[in-house]
Image 1 (tube, rainbow, N blue to C red):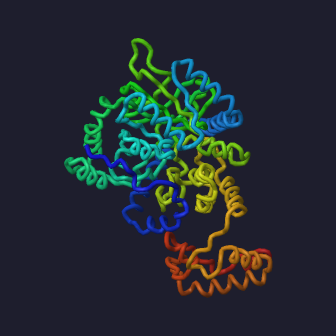
Image 2: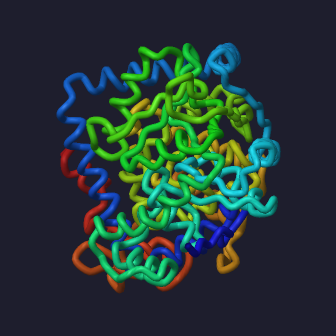
Image 3: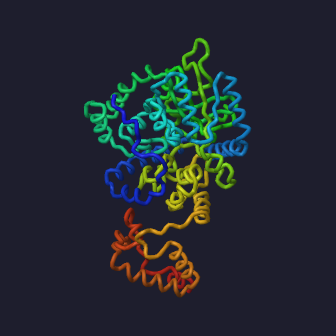
Length: 483
């Protein structure tokens, strides 16, 4: 089986969001794939939520539970670690990506594992584990269908829940034909069968399996993973060693609280009542059971305590990675996940990336938002994403230099000063609006401007139409109403 183990990019390229977004907007094939996939997921969520009486109360309860954990994270982490060890598991603490990779490689070498089957885990993407394993001479095979497709293509995930959301069936068919020498077919069932045949041998051969965690229960030391394919169960039970990569924010207090989050996550992410498989892993196998002989849990910080230290940004750690904010975001739906330049994309990516890697590397992400509030409306734990984006914008302005576009004759600060000056002088504002209304006659058509040729307005019409100014200004209409 041919696998392309080296991804096409490493590191954080969030500073290139404008260039990447421009390329995405010009890709008609990508635009259609994004539109169809995100719209389908969004509509599924709407139907699923309407079927649940009291869904808003469920969201409130989920938010309360995540707030409880994040505000007392130290004690819950200690409780979780104690319970894992009491169940026969091993706990490892990783402060950053390099330390997490070193721990995983050490476990693999001790187990004599030269091949690892990997379930879907965003933390492994975050720490670039595949690159570290390859450098150590260890082969990692992605078993999630979406991640398997991306490994063959040498790409990063484009979505938190659906990593290959930017691929059409035709793309996958051509990829399998080229990389796996498989027959060409666009039937989803047959494509899945091709991937299953390619992966089946790996589950039996690999000496180590690796997974992430959707939730980690402090009360019992259980790692909870949910899926629709069954590959996570293979990865966590067939090999003799199982390693779970767990971001420290994934904890929930009690086993009884799990029902709240399972109902929220499935409905918000894919519109299902529950996912097909929910696995609760508590330690290695007992006598007479199936499962691994060893279970290792690697608790990963990698910038999370940076967010924890900021009382305003702690709320971003409530995220349960459902992807609903991506599906509803008008920006993500146009530019896709790869434009964000790292593994976390969309509105939540614009929050956590600056926190995890530093505002200097991801300065532009908080500004890549219309602040429409749709993300806040669909978030299952009611994270106030627009408010946090504004906070990060202020932090970016205070800590970093405002970039000046190369084709801009006037910098952003100068433009904002001119705007503030006009807003404070009604006559200047009215004059500017009159001139704009006069000038738009050369561009507007049926209430919309399809294309501006000059910067900065050309940046707007590269990806969307510009609403034309009303023929009669509001001030004039208001005078008529009052009279």
